[in-house]
Image (cartoon, rainbow, N blue to C red; front, side):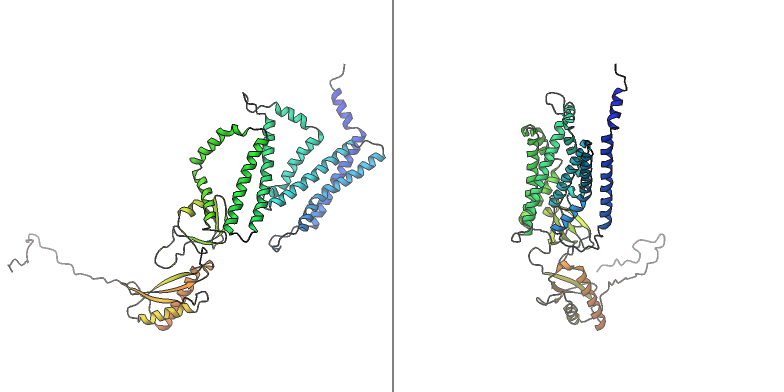
Length: 461
């Protein structure tokens, strides 16, 4: 009868076999070589700070060099293991473990290269590019399980775990398989959508809003189609999702009404071309915005940076990005300074004293606005006498500019300063608020007991 420790003794004998120890030593040497190569490459090719690198489009050679640097440590380890394989065969020692390590490293090279190319196709801001190492490690572990032959055992164990016991059987393996298949379809659909977006955005014959609309519509359509195809390919009957789609429809109708409205509003903005990237807009109904007869409303200026599915990214003059829901741009009034003609007229009110000559003040207002480089000469600046107010004579200078994208309040400030200087030079005074206060003498108090009508004249006319 075998002793209880015989299986443990057999495992120890296998682990201490000479060929296994030598193969482990070769693998350790390959690991050290890979670490040394990675350290040398990291020290030799340190990435420069982004501020010091001039902005330029990366060439395919740059991407090739970057990929070679990432694969160099793994290739060095494979070369070391291959040299160990040759040495073990020359000594007549079995190299099964060594060969298995070579297959795993070759799989790592292929996975690493595939993830890197996928990140390049999706762009530098994609989630694959930012999580390249994590995705590579997970995929390599899955491929390693398949190579070592453990996948059948894991599949059988996961199939025994039933998530939904009852009439419909859903094992843990089926769930994981479905997630992987759906993710693969979504990634492929995203790649196709990105390729379409790059092609459409290069068509200068189309308006910018039309290009953005086609890109966004194709992206959502292809990703949604990829999800449905992935669910079908995973073995799930799409017709069984009627209850789920009905619940989603009810949610969109009630809980997600605002989200759906913003998505629809985004497509409406793209179709009617009322706003596009690069436009300068200002909101009239924003708190603190003055709307009156002082010329074009200044509002809160911002440059449209992006048109997203749910919101519009607007960057103001302070460099702050504001996310404006698409629905607000549909239901609220705003000024698009770049919609048709960029020329706008500005009005500046000025009140002068009644003791000054209004004809001279009107002439000086025109002279103050003539020397500014941003004020148009055609049509010329004009001055008007608007009204006679309580405090003085209300005048107004009106002029046109062709570049509101460079700011409106700054040119208001420049013209106001010029008016102040030219008025001071010619002795024209600005009117100040005036109030007249009349003090009436208080009557002496009435003596006690005196008749109320004392001193009144009761004689008939």
